Length: 283
Picture 1 (cartoon, one colour):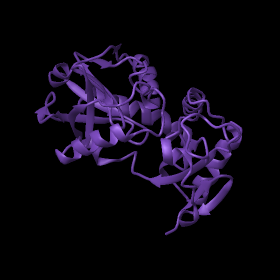
Picture 2: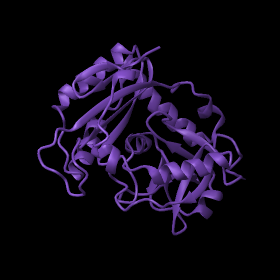
Picture 3: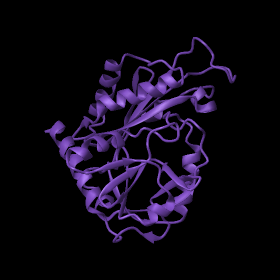
C-alpha cells in the first residue's frame, strides 16, 4: 500500500517524491534530521523534539523551512493521512540543491521531507526479553551532538554488531562507552543509573533527557559520568533508549551475561514510568 510522504510543501505518494542529485544532503550529508515516536496516533515529546531540531539546524547554519507551528501541522497531517497509530515520524532538512562546492552557497531553498513508519512500541517483545549488544570502535566525527545526516560511522558499527548476532552496537573510544549506534547507553550499579554526560561526544537523546528527569522523582539515583567497557561487563543492569525503543534492557554485552542475564528491575521501572506519562497524553 502506497504511503503519503511530505516533500517541499507537497503531500505525495512515496514513489513520486524525488530530490535533485545536486541536493547537498545527497552530496555532503549537509542537513539535520529527527525521529519522533507516535503513540495512539499522537506525536510524543513535542517540545524536546523542536528544541533539539532547532539546535541542530542552528549548529549547521540552516533555517527552518517553515514556522515551527506549521511544521507540527505538517507532521500531524502526515500522521492522519497514513492513519499511523504506533511507530514514528522521520523528518529532515538539507541546505538544498546547488553546484558542488564545499562552502555553504547563499540563497538556497532548503529541502524538507518527512515520512511515517510503523513500529510496535508499547508491547515490543524486545522490551520484555532484552537485547544483546557488542562493542565497536567509535570512528565518528567530533560534533556528535548535532543530529546531522552524517551517519556512516554508525552504519558501519551497526553492521558489525548485526554480523555478530547482536541487536545494537555500543561505540567505544579510549576504553569508554560513548553511546549506541542509534541509542543512548546506560548501566546500573547498586541501584544507580550511570550514563555519559552531555558534550560534543554524544547526541543529546530526547528519551535520555526525559528518563533522567523522571528517575529522581521516583527515587532512582542518576550519576552522569563516563563508564568503561569493563564497568559495563560488571554492571548489575544495562539498557538503551531511543525514540521508538523507549527503553530496552540489555542482557548481554560482547557475549557476557549482564547481571542475571535478564531484564533488570530499574530498566523495567523506568520504561513503565515513561509509558505511564505517555498514556496520559493519548487518553
